[in-house]
Length: 198
Ligand SMILES: *[C@@H]1O[C@H](CO)[C@@H](O)[C@H](O)[C@H]1NC(C)=O
Ligand SMILES: *[C@@H]1O[C@H](CO)[C@@H](O)[C@H](O)[C@H]1NC(C)=O
Ligand SMILES: *[C@@H]1O[C@H](CO)[C@@H](O)[C@H](O)[C@H]1NC(C)=O
Ligand SMILES: *[C@@H]1O[C@H](CO)[C@@H](O)[C@H](O)[C@H]1NC(C)=O
Ligand SMILES: *[C@@H]1O[C@H](CO)[C@@H](O)[C@H](O)[C@H]1NC(C)=O
Ligand SMILES: *[C@@H]1O[C@H](CO)[C@@H](O)[C@H](O)[C@H]1NC(C)=O
Image 1 (cartoon, protein in one colour):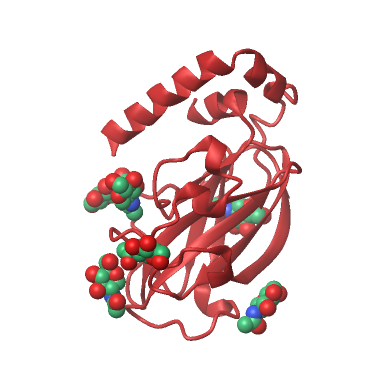
Image 2: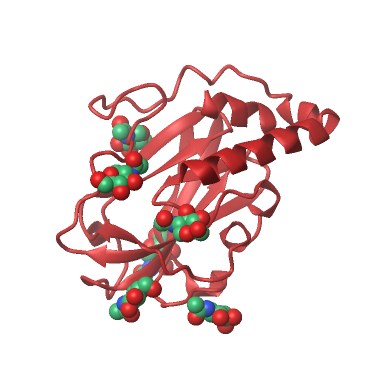
C-alpha cells in the first residue's frame, strides 16, 4: 500500500531502518544525507555484528552501496568511506540487506562509538542519499519488531527478488510532472501522517 503509493509518486528510495536523520524529502535526496546536514542526537543503537538495513526501492533495477563516517558530527560526503561496495539488485518494494559491520573493512569500530551510516542508491537517474546516526553496540540486537523483508517475502525466505510491485509504471515520472501539485499535496499529507505515527 505504502510502497505502491511511493511508486506512483516518484522514483526514489526510502531508508526504513536504521531510521534516517529526518523524514524523507524527495527533492533533497540527490544531496548529502537527503538534505539533513547536521547530526541528530536521537541515534539508533546498531549492532557491531549481524545487523541489517532496509529500504523501499521505487526503481525496478538499481545499485546501492554503504558508506560510513566515524566522525561525531558528519556534515559532508568527505567524512564517509565506502564499507559495502556497490551491488546490483532488481525489484521495487522493500529490501532488507545484511550489514555485518564487523565483516566490513571499516576500521576503529567499537562498542559505544557514535557513527553515521550513509546509504547510496542509484536507480539509473543519479545517486540518492539517506543517512542514519548510530551508536554501535557489541551486545544489542535489532529489535524484533523492526521489519526485515524482501518484497512480499518474509524474513524466513531466502528469496532475492521483490516481485509483486515490479510491474508498475515506468512512466511514473511523467505522471508526476503532470499531476505534480496533487502528488505534492498527497506527499505532504503522508509526511504529516508519518510524523503523527512516529
Ligand atoms: C530523531 O528525531 C527526528 C526529529 O524528530 C525524527 O525525524 C527522526 O526520525 C528521529 N530519529 C530516530 C532514529 O528516531
Ligand atoms: C554519542 O551520541 C549521544 C547522542 O548525541 C551522546 O549523548 C553521547 O555522549 C555520544 N557518545 C560519545 C562517546 O560521544
Ligand atoms: C555539526 O557541524 C556543523 C558544521 O560544522 C555545525 O553547524 C553544527 O552545529 C554541528 N552540530 C552539532 C550537533 O554539533
Ligand atoms: C573498503 O572497501 C571499499 C570498497 O571495496 C574501498 O573503496 C575502500 O577504500 C576500502 N576502505 C579501506 C579503509 O580499505
Ligand atoms: C518496537 O518496540 C519498541 C519498544 O518495545 C518501541 O519503542 C518501538 O517504537 C517499536 N518499533 C516499531 C518499529 O514498532
Ligand atoms: C534480500 O535480498 C538480498 C539480496 O539478495 C539478500 O542479501 C538478503 O539476505 C535478502 N533479505 C531477506 C530478508 O531475505
